[in-house]
Length: 203
Image (cartoon, rainbow, N blue to C red; front, side, top):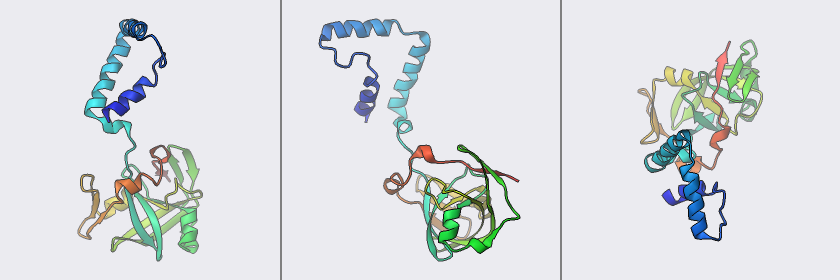
């Protein structure tokens, strides 16, 4: 892994194909000696990160759960940074719960991608996770949320006294029981880290 990171750093070398090795060493020495204190400081932090925290250079697998809503399989992302739980309109249609959308509860959802207006809210619906019945409410967004059907936010997590265990990749819902997150190898293939939004709701 260390060699991989050094190769990445070397990719920014101004003379990657320098044929004269001695001249190259002199040139590299000149570049090193001409570094500003700020760059030296950043290089030290980079070297420390490579040695002590190589995980920060890789994509972190997200916390996905397999769940069922109205008898249909859905993909759920557990997001402790989301104030409210949300569901995509595509998932609403797939689960055939369009009639459950209460349009009196429209909100503005603020996320990394900007502000979006919801289509309403689904109140008090049951989501099954590993045989556990979770009572949830969802703000309905008009577009697909990064390929995810639902996001389980702090409202549902707090209601169900959830405890997320990163080490064992499980989440315990109070006295109801625990569920295992999808394994990192599978979760990593689902969606890139950069596409994940954090959603909050403003009434």
